[in-house]
Image 1 (cartoon, rainbow, N blue to C red):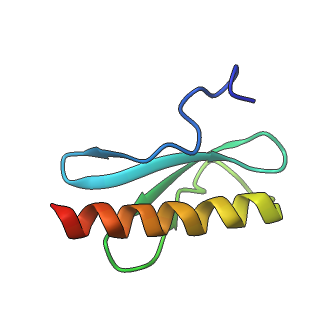
Image 2 (cartoon, rainbow, N blue to C red):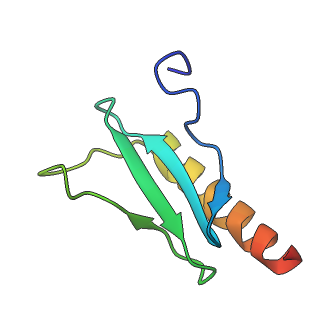
Length: 74
């Protein structure tokens, strides 16, 4: 999977916004945004539906925590 999406599951900041991309169970890239509120916004505009696996959900929890920790150190 990393060959197709080398930046998947990596948190980064751009213009003060925490962002990451996850790859759902059907190999669709989903852009995620974290606003320092313990939540994640998943951009689903291009899709009728998304399929999240247990691993996706675990990764989202990790990314939320990582984003919160990073916001707390800024």
